[in-house]
Length: 277
Image 1 (cartoon, rainbow, N blue to C red):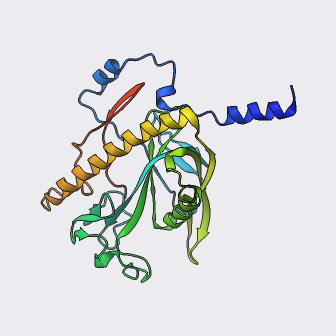
Image 2 (image 1 turned 90 degrees about the vertical axis):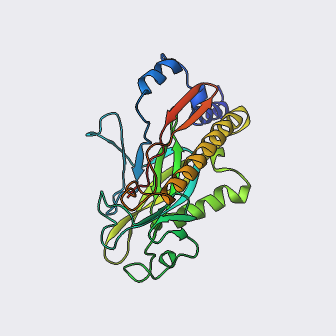
Image 3 (image 1 turned 30 degrees about the horizontal axis):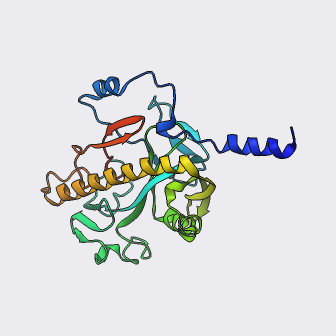
C-alpha cells in the first residue's frame, strides 16, 4: 500500500465522528428510556473554565466524586448564545449566590434592575469593582456535542474568554460563511496573568469540516436542538419577568421547562440548566 493511500486512510479514521443518529449498538428502546425518565429531568453536564490558571477541564461523569480531567475537549458547537448575570458586590464568586438580575439571552434582564441589557447602566465598561470591567457579568454559553454522545455538554465562557471565542468564530466560520455546527473543534486552555493573579482563558482550534451526508445529518440535529433551546429560553425569560422577589431564586428561570430532541435514531427529554455562577 502506498504511503499516500495510508495517509488518506489515517486521515479518514481521525475524522470519524459518531453523531447521535449514527451511534450503533443501543440495547435500549426509546420506551425503555422514557420509563426510566418518568418523574426525572435531564440536566446538562456543565463544564466551567477553571480558575487560578489551571490547565485542565473538570468533566462530570457517572461518579460525581470522581470527575475526569482533560486538557482539551473536542466536539461540535451545536449552538451558542449570550448570557448575563449581576450579583451583589462581593458575592459573584460564591457557589450558591443568587444574582440580583440575569438574562438567558443577553438581551432582556429579569430581576433588579432588569430591562434592556444594551442600555443598562450596569452593562457598561467601568462599572466593575476594578473600575474597568462591567458590574454585570457577560458570558457566552456553548453547547458542545462530543463524539458518540447523545447530548452536548454546556460550557460557559467567562468575560475573559469571550474575545478569544469571537476571534476564532469570526475567522473559522463567519469568514467562510459556515455555521458553527459544520466543523469539529478543539477547546483548550492557556494561562494568563492580570499583574496580580493567574487565570485561565479558553483557546479554540478548528480540526476539520463536515461534508456530504454527515454534514446533512449534523445540520438536522443542530437545527432541532437550537429551536428547542431558544423556546426554553423564551419560556424561562417570560417566567422570570413574572416572578416575585421571593420566587426569584433560580437565576431567572424555573426548573419546569423541558425540551425534546427527535432525530432518526434518538429521542431525548430533559431540562435546560440554570445559568452557572
